[in-house]
Length: 256
Image (cartoon, rainbow, N blue to C red; front, side, top):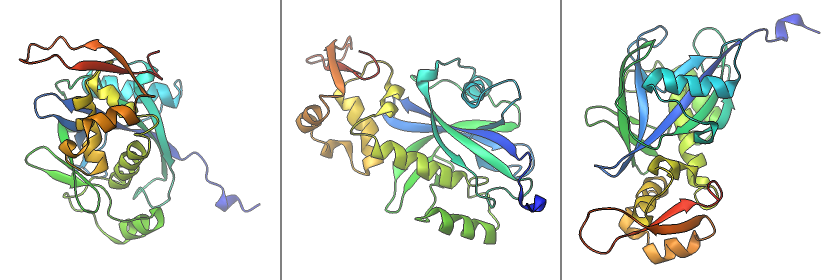
């Protein structure tokens, strides 16, 4: 066997797409951090950490949430997305990334952790070719390439400007958005950003950007009917808003 063809001890890091929901703007959000280490010093990126020898990948993903925003979560709030191993994804030492998604039940204040000079929430929107995330000052889009091979071939030939996310994070974010979109009708874990209970209006607000449509075009009655196998009615909301209280639901497959 050719020993030079064997990949020995690559770096393994954890990339975490951390989702939340802004009750004021009614927008889905993700957390991005501004890197303060090489490579890509000064670039915005998804939160990352190297996996330690004494922890599993799941434990590292939860530790990353604690380190970046100081929240301790149960495993039910975090799920593995995919493993990214393309040799072109990092410019230096070969690094494999185990990507996770975390769904926060609120939108906490941020304090940059180790390796970051800034941390901000970016609200989700959609474009003709993908998805966009903005904080009002900066906007980043998901990868435009349709296939993994096309994306990494283009990445290898170009020098990323700071208008792009570091590494291959635009591709990872594209995969995350498409994963969530494809699971909306049978396992919408993204609704965990609303907390354990939610109204149908809030659920439609979360669905809308992934479906690339205004939430008003998602008919409430049809939505309720098509998702009744996923939602359990738990009563009325305690909101002080005028008018008839809205019905409140929970995810039946997670909270029986």
